[in-house]
Image (cartoon, rainbow, N blue to C red):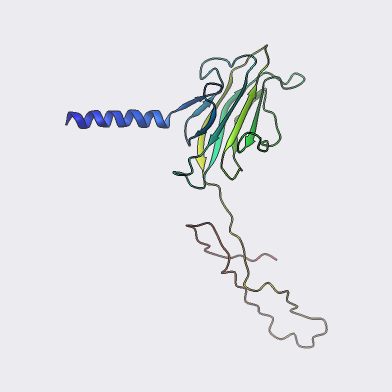
Length: 201
């Protein structure tokens, strides 16, 4: 009985560590697979970030356990030096790995309200780059890391998409003007079903 209690305690300790992992800019580097945790500047939860930083980190979903998912960063706090005349301590975020397209082509700095970033990269990753100058440091940031599966719209496909002339000007008797539309070849992602069709002209 005592062995079971010890094993349960160890399992709870490991799961607590797994699901409450902190990631620190500059300490944690490279590409990290995760769908949970908190992402901090180099000062962590209690200190300011440092001077002359130039750090990069990439977060990716674990597609083996979370197929089709992408990373979402929810920034609950963000404060860096700037923008008196320009951003001086700058965060940039890219979709995918380093070298990927910038999120909104934007540099993040100053005291910003809460915001979130979702990857649109096929691999579901986001890469964060941060540089600071050698003067004033601020509180930095706190961001919650989660994963989600984005909505994938179905692909519409008609059985017959030949143009129709229902009421020809030269016709004395247009005949039957009722047309049956069939979109059953339409497709959606695996595991989901198209339950209704709506026609918009």
